[in-house]
Image (cartoon, rainbow, N blue to C red; front, side, top):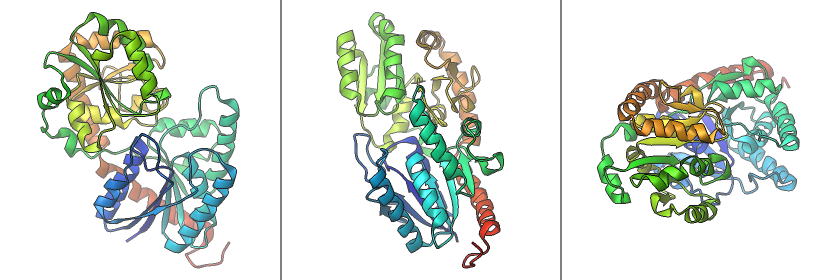
Length: 399
């Protein structure tokens, strides 16, 4: 049995958090003792804490000062809180997730008296286009943190390339472990497509372009409106289905009203994760025009549900949405091409189904939660060996 402490900044509904919780659940199933630490949960994105508590076998720990924004005083306190927690739990492995928890958690784990192996997962790029000063600060912090861990997990090869290009760590430090998905709810037949559509007020003949994402700036909802606004006006049977909530909801609703297409868009708001597979099945195309991604779980989930994705060629997205093989890739930010791709697929249902079928086979083989947990087992074993080499067996005073 291995004692594992996962650390995540916010346990909201999101891809990295789903990845983390699935990892915890899978590791409990293998007989490990699993702990999960996180900062205060707030905002309209929802929380995964109820799921963790319902599972019942994961010890949870709230870290009061672990917050997402850079706040020096809070960050110093969060580091101290994490270090104290690590020394209390005495984990074999500290596994950090996301940028803030990744930086503070790695530092705390590295300097803890209990000498855990330290592992970090890159779920997505922390570097923002055009943000020169913040990117420089993040790069320096990531370089420091990379020297204070035994292994780095990338959910996509693209993440490894981006970090190495910035001089963060060495190639030997990185291992790609795909972000896994619980397959069963997506390949299940209930609720059916027609049942979900009826509940949403969608007719069987409607052509439905869906998104599953936070209503936020970098997720591309505005791009989708720019690309398809005229199509939604001219084609009475076209609909958008937006699954999720976020800080941009009111702004997006105002834009829909100003365009005169509010009646062509279904906004579900925040939904429990258990409802997402059925909502996916209600779609004809999943649109994912996101500007920043690690490995988009939404695309994997759509393919498992039998839905063809159209996505921006961004970061790790091409590693699951392979152009004209398992979906349709569009140059990032090319709204005209985004519209053309969706119109192309709207008129070719057989092509949509063929791409989704090919993608479902790939996703089921390479992106299952079991494959992810097995990959982490290998990483942990290597990390604990690296820990022992650098500082001697647990309890020694080599350092």
